[in-house]
Image (cartoon, rainbow, N blue to C red; front, side, top):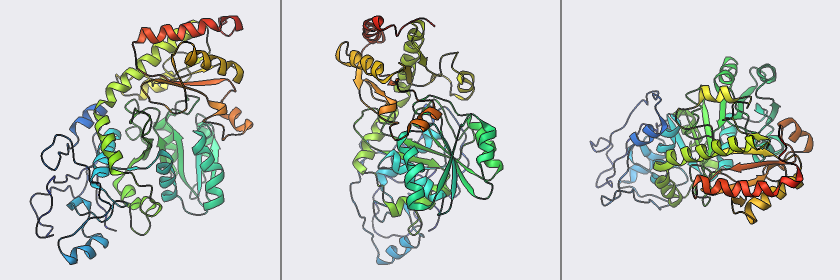
Length: 448
């Protein structure tokens, strides 16, 4: 299929009328997308094309059609050969390209500073589609041993069984270990999270990208924990994946994902004969894409408040004697690294962890925080406007066995908190402090 850039394309808001002749002045197309110049992600989003509604509405229209008509019979053949495509406002079928989903994808590309992006039905579908596009049967990957449990299960169990793709897991902070694990000529992907789930280790994206690129390996990074905060492609990564369900959505009501990267990769994933997105069909619903498009303009404000409150609470909890893990604290081993890579004014992330040592103590704290003081909810996921808490070892990292959890640094009592922004900061702090005071008799708050 002919390649068509996505991020730099400008689509007319007008409906095609009459002939399907491609030489029309009402479509402006960037033939060869230029390498994007990085800017503040909020500014990049503001500079992205604004799509108006069919009748001049300030919000874009929802293109809910599964299939699309053509004006001339010959056009169908030209579309299937790749001669005509969405860059000229020609659409075949919504599993391939949908105008509303494509508009959201342009915003994700702007957010991450990539040539192109495309949105999917879930974060896991984005991850699996990218890896299957980059790796064939017999292929090899190197990945961080500290990953979201679902991703770890995909790499450990599903891909070896179903696709004969194997993975070597490494301590991503041990760069010599990473180098040794890469088999030059065989390893296709280096995969890691910018900020690891749930241990909040920070990856040295520039150095890891250099190591991988020296050996011809593609760097794929999950940036779900730190949109706006970190820009992996600016730091050297090739591809960024997101679970949009989290911070980008912000409402805990949508499941969605995204792949952001070079136009050549995204287009190959949409190829009619070899593309994983096209053939596996993790298609985003156009109505979901519309809802998400309405939330992206205030993502920067939401992220700043998430991050600000997480920093304040982590600092105060540390003073109370709790074992707090938060990369914004100066005693975090990756604090200086994150500070050197982060976009200014967006803080250090909206997630903190508290190590309560045992699952029983972790459960007691969470029970008090939810049912006694109403500080937050016991629930998985993150990026919601209310604080969400879970004991990672028995929930989102339960796919890992005991040894794997130990290697990843996940203790039985590790409580992950995605800090929300509802209520006032001091109101929520008083609720947190009240719950902690109830824990005093268990000697969990002993000073360091």
